[in-house]
Image 1 (cartoon, one colour):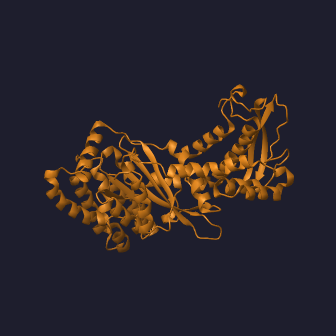
Image 2 (cartoon, one colour):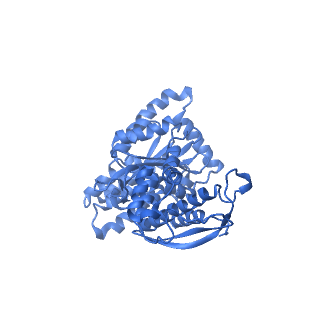
Image 3 (cartoon, one colour):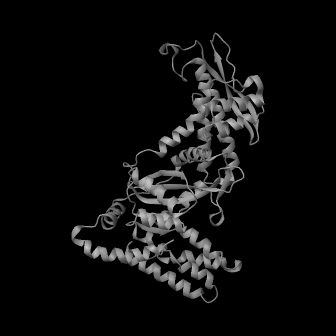
Length: 445
């Protein structure tokens, strides 16, 4: 990587590379924590240099009224020990200055400090006052902890301000065909149970992935999800054609309330997990193979649409009948809300593999067994949401979209007209169809 690339940009690149490996987040949590600490502490150092010189990196002194003489002259590596492990920083070097630069945050010889972690984890995004930050640092580091109010304020507010701006942005320019919804659990307060963070991703009408929304939820209740989705709608997000989610009842009810015209797809992977949980270990391979065979349409000469949906629904019932006598509990789970397993078959065939499950979300959030998705601990709600957003916002740059061919675009256009804007002369017939469809969709999970 070019020497002109700043240390913070290099750390961003490492975070991007980490998520590009497609590993579940829990497996890389410690590495993410170290990179996050490294990124924020490096940003603190660079902010100090910017304040000292009175100008940004590569900004000429002649263009700034009160700039100090001198310039940046590379970096010197230094290792700071934290409870998350050693963190290597690039301490800036300067030349041509009339006064020596010394970091007031790290001092000249600081190589181990828990206070720095407190600054990184708490002050950056939890909203501690400047006085609180200075007191925390002074307690651990003494006089060398002195740091200007402007530097602390800038660092403490940056990430939270970025998240709040993102979370309040208008969404009229975002039009999605597919909307993925899920919640993942984080420990936001020490000693308290994990609490959900609600998330929304989408695939836009031109096939691009979009990170749409992230917010804390008061449980996974209907009210929590309604508030979350209503906020997206209020900011301009229109109805998708298909909503993909797991089987949380509060989420299902909220989808039906906010997006009554959209179809809803039950995550096939979540449903399989629930079925296998009621299946003896020795038979799980057979049930798993048979389950996925139900949805194998590669040899069928049937276009996406109601006929294909009916065929797969018939396969689901036949599979359940085959095993109902020996595994009644597992087959009862399979048939519960079965209509939601096949909604994706009305959409372009080249999209089927991606829109029949919510792993688009889980691969980023971190997947654990049967909805027990507890990731780490944070020192407060603001800290949690801001840091999670910062990481996921970076990760979203590497998400894959969907190919939009002329044929798939036509099919999606026709679905949008029939579901969301039916022609006036067809509305009486569609009203009946919609009532029937509502009964079927209500049974999805």
